[in-house]
Image (cartoon, rainbow, N blue to C red; front, top):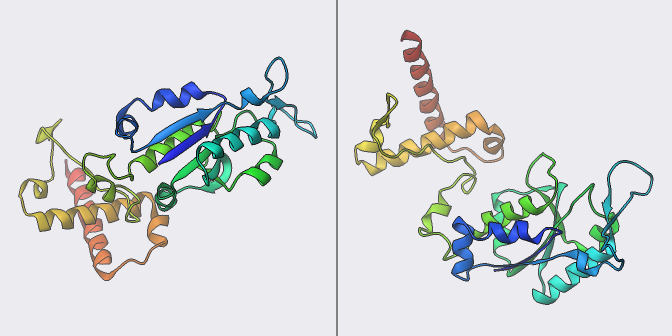
Length: 253
């Protein structure tokens, strides 16, 4: 997969590509990420890419023309690329959308700065505006890296175990189940006995129950958006009973 990030801070993007999953994807040629700085298309001595907003107000707005030329160059490098602008007012991106984007041959990701970009640039040069959450950041570079990282995990050859991506939070519409590793007891807290018994069917049932329970407790909107089966309702009842028993036991201590 080929990605071009349009950014005023190329180093912020390229340096992050040297570590962890992203570094492995790049080293294996599973993923290619380039950057283009729109300042190279500025026409004045100071390479100005922003100006005051019409109508007044605080901050500065990125100018349309340098961004347009940067995107045109990016598309020359990655023909037919889908052009995405990262912004707080964009469509919230979820795992399903990440999976769809990861199936594309190439992307151009535009990282805005300041108060945003000239809306005319978005209208004429962008295919989709996405947001990584209901929060405001200083620029689109970190959201772009988040999107790249999420997509890279889904590309064949990135992860050491491809099955890992199939069981992560949101992939099945649920949050992930809790994980444990050695030691068996830490700070007086033991690993759940079911995980030590070797009964894979029981372990799978426990994990499913935990995923459903966590989703109900932390992200009920995810359950509201899917059809809960009869078996899942039974598991949710078991989870609720387990939680009640745990609270009762804690109250006795």
